[in-house]
Length: 260
Image (cartoon, rainbow, N blue to C red; front, side, top):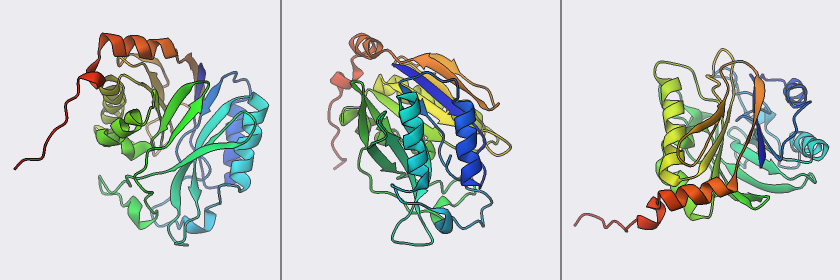
């Protein structure tokens, strides 16, 4: 499977963001195109209300992703703000759109970024902790968003639900040790789950970039720095099977009991 990771600095103008995605994917030939978290509309300043910009799963942004998917004959995954029943706090949602433009699945971010002095829960609503896995050419992709990466049990739940690869759109904030955490956690989730990790991140003044594809043994197959752009690389399903034969840790698990 040919995978394309698209890295850009999204702004608060939806039309401009869609235009940037189209520009950066113009020459892309891939089976799977992964865009960052909040690529529809960036978080903006901490006091910027996100409810008014949220859309439905069949709104204009979803239509733009569907058009992109049809043009490239590829599955496209990217992040948006989805309306909820709380007009002030939408969901932070990933959409997965198939090559025919149909919605394959969606995922509402579960772990909100109330960390390092930031309070995502004041502006957004958390989704229910239910694994979201979509099938692309026989490869099952488990969906995570940014801060979810810090919770290994969530990645394991996706693998237990059948995921062969973890797709992680993100807007990972820059800062002391943040870049190191991002790179370390991506490789750790790959190693402990013997799964590919497909991570597409925002870049720019606020975010670290460093999008990458990591194989099931933790090897970085391809990566970007902090410039806008895209990379393409191969995700080989046979590599997953081989890694799980060499390192059968998933089969070796024994259930833990609660302490008395």
